[in-house]
Length: 97
Picture: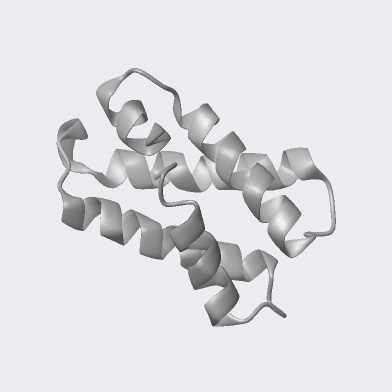
């Protein structure tokens, strides 16, 4: 299902990736607030990461950096969450990325 890879190749959209990740995180961590705002925040972060990759050509190192950045970003929404919970979430959603 690697939506993030598909977004790089043009067969999916960054919005699809952000939506899937936001839904998973919302359910897993019971994030309080407006879902649409959370989704837009995730989408903004994913777009920034996507634009940071040189000309759309990326390596596995880039993908690893994106996963790390996304994990750090998610921690801002779940300050009470344990690092192990975030790592488990990212590992479980790796097929999206």
